[in-house]
Image 1: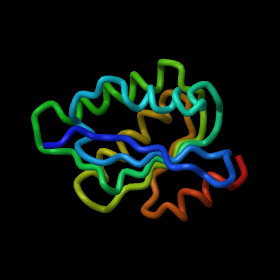
Image 2 (image 1 turned 90 degrees about the horizontal axis):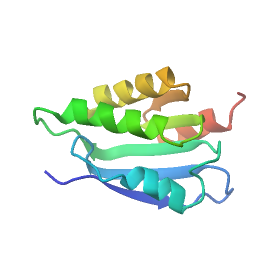
Image 3 (image 1 turned 120 degrees about the horizontal axis):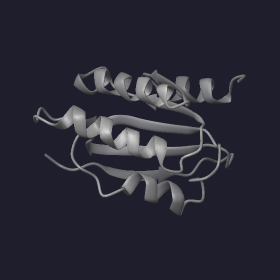
Length: 129
């Protein structure tokens, strides 16, 4: 199992943050996502966020889903502004976990939805509120 890594992808418009996640999203994380968002100056903004999880996995270890839920709760309640969050996921074992993430974010006041392509995610992000 490889712990997840996060890469920020520049958006030509400068108004959307793209985050590409690679590896196991159910392993403990030392706050990389929050630090990444703050480092690029969008940690306290309402800029929409597209999270590409197509290269992420949720390995079948006992605490994976609980760890993932704890991480999402921590991100959602510690300084990230309420915003639109589009999650892009491949149709595999991580898809159910991605829907769990979307549901949890929605419970914390984010507008969150799951898509199967970055283009569909971007269309939703650019659409009317």
